[in-house]
Length: 316
Ligand code: FES
Image (tube, rainbow, N blue to C red):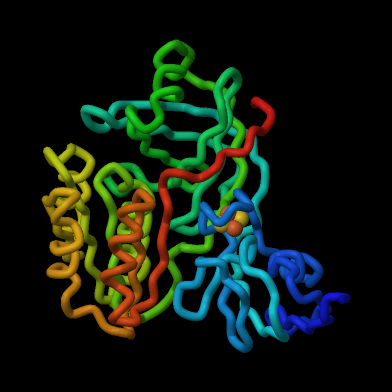
């Protein structure tokens, strides 16, 4: 039997589609651009809001949203794709890589023009002789930003290959190719109370959102929670004191993986449907936060910082 023909409205623009087709295919036929990166439902790069109708979400639904690369069409639909900077390829130079703690490096990549991105998005960084890595741009640990630069924080254990590669290079300036930005869990201009929660080793996107909201949304109520499973690292202490000096509530939640759920419940006990939660970390961490957020009906934006597929691109 032939698949039923459907109508999909993408930000008000109508396209025809077929029952069972991937939502992203219908969106791609519209004039609205939605960047897809991993195509496997892993990177939160293609989440769209479903305003009318429903989809077969294949386990990707969060409230009234789904991942377009995974969801399939079952009926007529209206979706909204949040405007975001269009991914592009840029050439730049790694101008510094300095230790920012025992197991962390702060990388500064300079470009001839300012890259567009929103805190919570990521870029794919490639260097000659090194596999591409997905990294979240952020700010320097002293909160500094430079218009034509991106700062990246890398955990030397998580990115051991890149760390070893950089350690071998003695040159001051290395050519770098960057593609992006990707991701739909970025910080929005909203008034709702904001919670930014991260695992200590996934602090980069949380730090970007915390600094941007502190500086750019000063009247917005906000709370940053950094979850640490062991000794508190230098970057976490630096974030904590920078935020507290600027009156942004920031807590370090020292816990264990077994007590995480209970401790998150306590920390987020007054969460309500008007709040917005961004959580950055491993899949199991995001699952725990989702479990705590779900009963409150707060908006939830997961930022997966590991387990994303890294497509192989040409070396710089
Ligand atoms: S492209 Fe859909 S989550 Fe990666």
